[in-house]
Length: 310
Image (cartoon, rainbow, N blue to C red; front, side, top):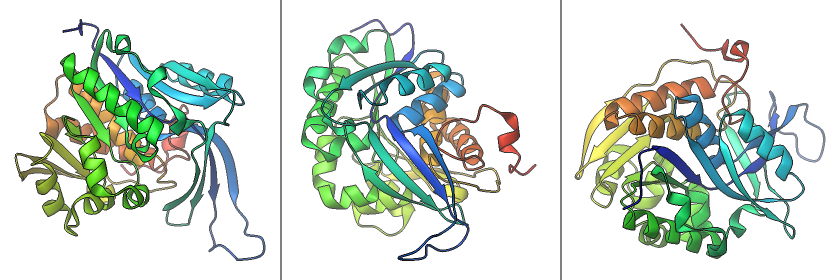
C-alpha cells in the first residue's frame, strides 16, 4: 500500500472555461436579450478541487487535459486557489468551454463543448500520481467519452489496489441519459462514495423520489449522498437513508458550481475525519455560499457573499 500520510486529495476531471451569461428576462428567440456576461475558470473537477482547498484541505491536486489556448490561464487560476495543477496540454483540441445561461431564479442551463477535457487518455495517468494521496475523486464527465472513461476506470482500479477510497460525482443527468445508467454504474463499480444530485440519482435508478433513489444506490456503493439544492442533502448507507441534512438559507445569484462546492467541502471534511453527516453539513454550507456568487469557484472577495442570509 502506498504512503498516504500526506493526506492529499487528487481530483481527476474536467478543467473548463466558463462563459456565464445572466439574463433577467426570458431569452428572446432570433433577437437580442440583455445579459451580464463573464468568462471564468470552471469545470466540475477543478471547481471541486478549489472548494476542497477553500475548505481546509492543504494538499489538493487536479489532473485534467486542457488545450494550449488557455492552459497558462487555468494553471494560474488553480494555483491562486491553492490547488496543484497537473494539467496535460493538448495541441490538437481547445480547452473545454461551457456557456452557462443563468435565469432570474439563478437556475442554469449549460451548452457544453467538451474539447480537450474528455480526451484525457490512459497515457496521461500513472499509478504514481497516487503517492501521498488519501482520497481520489473522479468527475463523472470523464465517463461520457471512451478515452476519458478508460482513464477513469484505470485510476479507480489503481486506487483500489493502493487502498485509496474513491468518490464519483455523476455530473450530468442529460449525459447520463445518453450513456445509459447501466454503463455508468458498471464503469464506477468499486467506488466508495457516490455524490449525485436528485436528477442524477433519478436517472441512475428510475425512481422519482430522491429517498428511494438514494437508498437503492447505497446498495451498490457503501456511501451515497444525494444533494437536493436548497433542500439540503440525503445520506444513505446499506440500502437505507440514514440522515437528512438541511442547507443554510441563501439568496441565490447563480447556481453554477453549487454541487461542485458541496463535493469539495464534503471531501475536505472527510479527509479531516468527519463522519458522513458532518461532511454533508459542510458540503451544504459551501453550496449555500456558492450560489451567492457568479461562477463555480470560491469567492475571493468577501463582499461577493453579501446575498447570504444571516
